[in-house]
Image 1 (cartoon, rainbow, N blue to C red):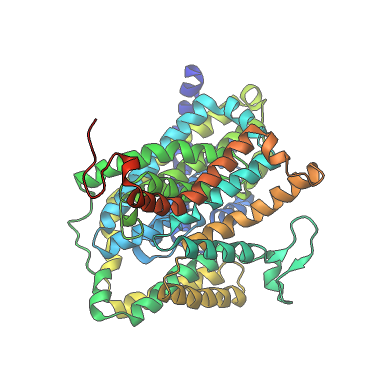
Image 2 (image 1 turned 90 degrees about the horizontal axis):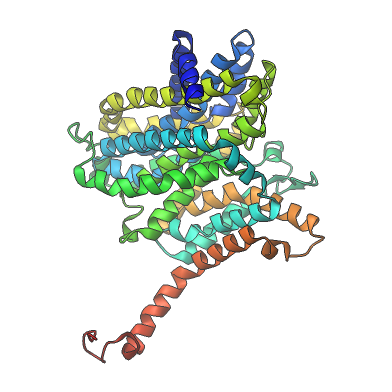
Length: 512
């Protein structure tokens, strides 16, 4: 393996491949900053341009776009409350609040550091553990995947800093929105109301930009001059996180890396689910969960690390099994095959230079992303120094361009505006958008895997309990959904029965 790694670096460090890695990571950052374009569309557009390129160089460039997108999406999420990609939606919750408090530089620095650590450790996982982990992913059938999605949905109670009931209500709305479009198994129309645009469902980009970006603009218009000033009050000396913020970020980064990496390997998991689960995990283990959603550094460090580790994990089934588990890895598989290379178990024997060249180029690409992003943080946060009358139209313009550029369809813009108004009303009545987005992302995958499992078992629910993995995931889901409601009940029991807790009525806890 050591010899193979050296061979890989000798290939990826050639001038040509370093240049293509730089091109890919730079394009990925730009694509992440521009909402609506997306890595899938960019890779599809560039695919014909790689026909005459060396296969290793082509995959290095296209892969750089894939894992560079999360870096760019973080910028708009933190600075303007506009999620550039689905995997940076969660970053809006605390990242933008940090920016309003003048800590945008710290948020972007921690996001870049966490992303670098998550990606680097994820690539190390590819190097050392690719074949055994890929075989584990194959054992995830429809029943296990259904249970995983159910466990993911239970995170809605941790994504809300308000009422758990309101969070569940938002999740139900998200599940309903996920049903819009064609039935995934039978092809029938659902909730389309005769509108052709809705046949493909509601795209997450106008949905998220409406709920976050447009709603933020409307809130800024309504807010007082003092509230508006919070957005422009960033000081250039606050570019780096404090020692306390670095200390608080270490735990989330170390926890988010394995979570994101393992979820990236699973079918349908990827960076989106990894970021949501990491955020819920950090809120669950935190001693101060009430701080989440108000601008806490843990809410940025965990999700940003997880989504980059998840992106690295997604390469394992592609490279070792030849199985793409999301749209972008499917496009990368097409790029491999266009050049006459078939990823899978035999790639290490038939084309080791391609496998190790691509894997080692990811180390180089992540260093490039760190070098590209950290020095420019001072430039980026100057966006927040723009006066409110100029900044709010710019945010709205970015949202409109992003929604329209998806398919050059005015209906996407209308959908974004509608959800912008909905998001504004949700703010007024203290309903949070994150549970809705999570349920919207997981809903279609949950429906498809649930129906496949029931078809396989002839309608028997026992399939979800006979599998040990599925049973454990369902147990975790049950505990997650009930714990927010049981905690108040236990607190009341302590008051009603103080002797059960070693405390005499009206006194302090007795010592043994």
